[in-house]
Image 1 (cartoon, rainbow, N blue to C red):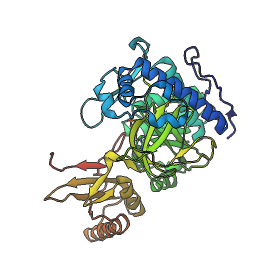
Image 2 (spheres, rainbow, N blue to C red):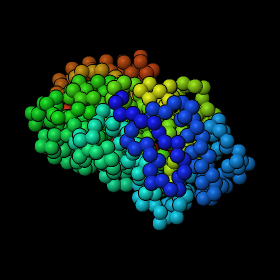
Image 3 (cartoon, rainbow, N blue to C red):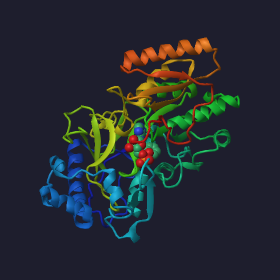
Image 4 (cartoon, rainbow, N blue to C red):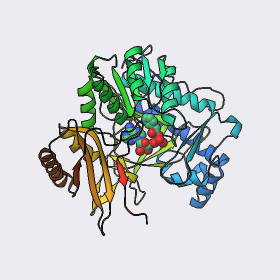
Length: 447
Ligand code: DLL
């Protein structure tokens, strides 16, 4: 990486507008990082306890006090935080600063109940812009690039998060937001962006639109795609890179912790997401026992924010399943493996655990099939049934479709271990998303 600097150790959170990392990829040693994290953890814990009644009560319930948190190993003593805690404190109950100091609100709708609301101070927005700038740089974007942002703008953190980061890096931002697929393609043709940021599933729709209009997706100005906000696979990366010639890299984040830019994959090594550990302390726990898993084991990712002012979070349970491994491109910071799925997306089919990403791998291995698919869950009797809807690129004869369906059913049975019915639909009929793809359609009767 060409752009390197050491990171400031300044942990005085009250006076500095920004923590000083700017847009640069950190080169701090592991010792330095642990020192910074420890200081920041203590400040965060203190603020959470002093300023947020929810956390004060949670500390008291656990019989702990901020003074008990002296080192990073003490993190496990802290209470876990979940989506339910955000809902119970709706809308502003988890803010650690007076509402007047909150300059931005975002929210995620979720599938049920109240939305979860998050807030940012001016400095939080600044830190976020720095981290997204860092992420874009790490992915392979450069100051001076044109960045086409097709993540949705609004309460969702994708659009504005990407936007501020691209500006911070010194790029020219095209804030298209999601939707109007034909216009997206026209703007790519007209403005010549080098970088595009959107969900991988929506990018597939843009590639299809290019195909439809006779534009060779290899011929665009695009060099790097920064894809996230939903699970995707190595097979999907190969599909996107093969069809466009760009570098497709993964960006991770969630509103409750910040938004996009919590972790980013390097465009050079493409080996999973480095977590920006100077701002977010990761752990992986067993979702059932809530105990930390052994190093390198898969479990639920949990984050403690280290620099957030408006809404610090302690041990936030992401429900995302992954494993941690040592850093490569940034040696002191750990990587997380591509997310296999959220525990919410886990389908249990006759006792076998299946994530839509596992289905995606096998759908993409079938060259006649387009990458669009959906998993439909029904319950005709007592058993849950999984039907995988797929569609071919070109219309197929019934016999050909039947052969393909049987082959895929067989692969799913032998490779994933579950029984699924595969239904081949007509080209273009499976739901397209303009943001996060809806992979699971649950048609089971409501309990
Ligand atoms: O999706 C933030 C974001 C925007 C990330 C743009 C990346 C790009 P939420 O709407 O709160 O925030 O959803 C967060 O999306 O817990 C994961 O389940 C999923 N997710 C986000 N990035 C990835 C990724 C944004 N790269 C939830 N791979 C998270 C897999 C992802 N899942």
